[in-house]
Image (cartoon, rainbow, N blue to C red; front, side, top):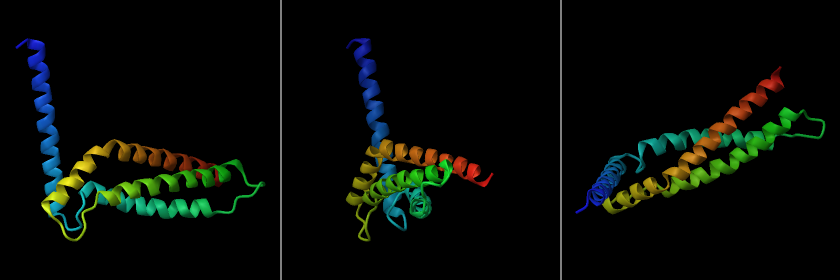
Length: 143
């Protein structure tokens, strides 16, 4: 076997073992958890619930033509935030295992959690950016 081929094969094996270990570890955490969800996802869901409530309040605020640009920006960013919190909550609900937990359901949830990690991380980054923009605009409104 050529050295380059051997290195490629070894890398593929290591990557497969890493993915499988993460899958089994996540499935075990889900199966043993009190609420049938990964700990990180449970924390994220709690924060997103609060952020969703705040974004709903911001998007409902009355903004008229005479409002300042920061007030209009906060309302608009609140609407974007609301859209992304709904998407993120949709992902997190799909990754929950119901009351009747089985090993297969836990493995399936762990698999989808690993597969959708990039999408979830992207939404979290968006929400962090929105939070930053809202804070900046609120400071401008208060000055």
